[in-house]
Length: 86
Image 1: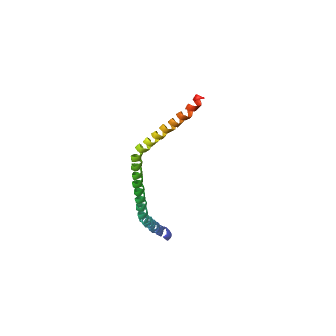
Image 2: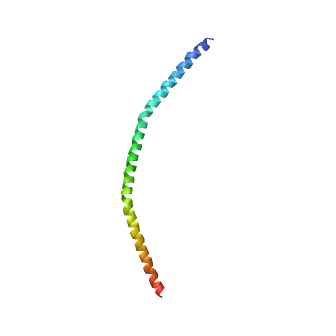
Image 3: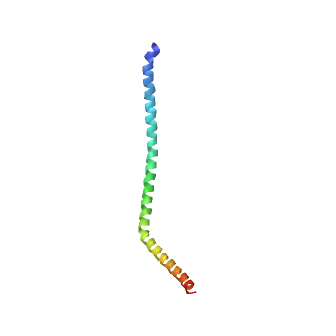
């Protein structure tokens, strides 16, 4: 009977200890989470700069590709002309 009377306070103490341990563990993870968020923000900023660069260069790349296609078409036309004459 005496152990039944002490079981309540023992369980309460155990639960309070677990609560404090969990709170301490959560508090210790906050700096790691903040560091990870800073790294994510830096990565997003870098991606934003890369996308801006690509957006600026895309028209130039399109023009270059069109010139290359025109050159290839001209070469194909030249290659077909002598074969057609024979």
